[in-house]
Length: 156
Image (cartoon, rainbow, N blue to C red; front, side, top):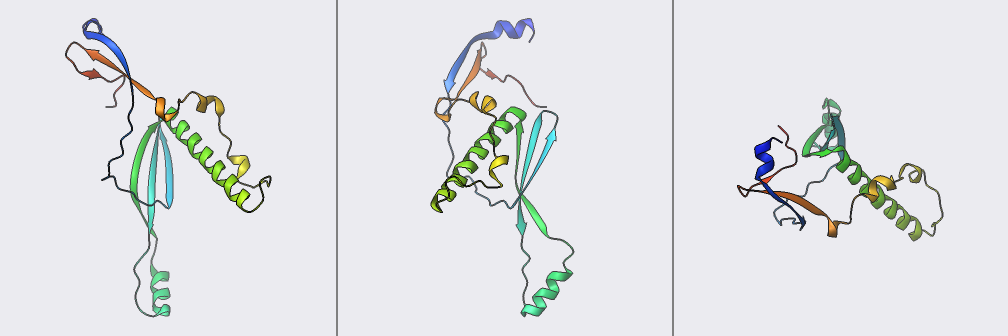
């Protein structure tokens, strides 16, 4: 930040975030996930396996299916996250999976059963503890002389 930018800064104001999910947002089903790292960011690519439309008798369908060289998976969503946010999201997902697993075991009367899934689902509590609960998450915005919020960082 140079001297002119510093002098334009009037204040830093912290505001609570109100989470809005519009009714028009699309919900897609993903059957596959590819995770790629690029520098300090993670790209999550969600895919849905496309089933071919086959007609004819069962034998004709089986023959046609065997002749298809590959199965297609259509990318339904691409999300890029910082390493910190990806770790927080992974922690939330792991916590949800652990709760689901415990609920399913309890429904079968196996509260204390050990599953092969459980050892892999450990949350890094130190990392997860730094993320405040959703209801209290806040964002700090720099208010400038020109009245525009300046982002802390930008991606070019």
